Length: 212
Image 1 (cartoon, rainbow, N blue to C red):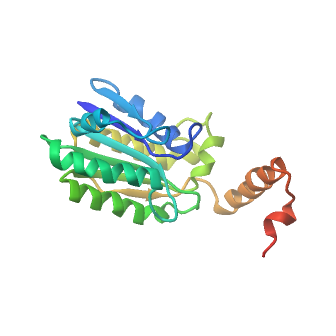
Image 2: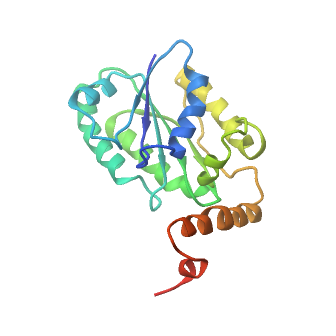
């Protein structure tokens, strides 16, 4: 099959969406032609839109933005819809990988519905979506094997998703939390991420808590 991996993160590098696609790719590489697209770097060309219309599978990865889709990815999907209606010939299956900064993966449910509705408008098959909570943890877990420790739920979900992609199957979407205590996540995020980022930018803890 021809499989398109679409990195919908606004970040140019070190994005959680790239990490998730990097986890999935080895599981689906064998026997398939994989092409990666980065609409965050520059708009897709007409040729690239036409390529997407000839794919067998689209995997769209992105972070949650105000319970929805990042604006640049939304614009790309709106443009791709017109190409799909005009140029698509065969059946295309769409799978989604979503991560959000809140602990609860359930927070991704509205963005998942947006992708499902987009598929309906384009005449595409929505295969499955995965929604990972506490996505900002992933950058700190680079050395943790997928399917182990805090990534246990994600690893199991990825294995199932890979199987569905291989067979172009439709399955129930999965929204899940990391295998990590919520209180420990909150403590670690506060001291290792927010406070550290504030200090790096010349701010103090009281500056974060200040209200206008």
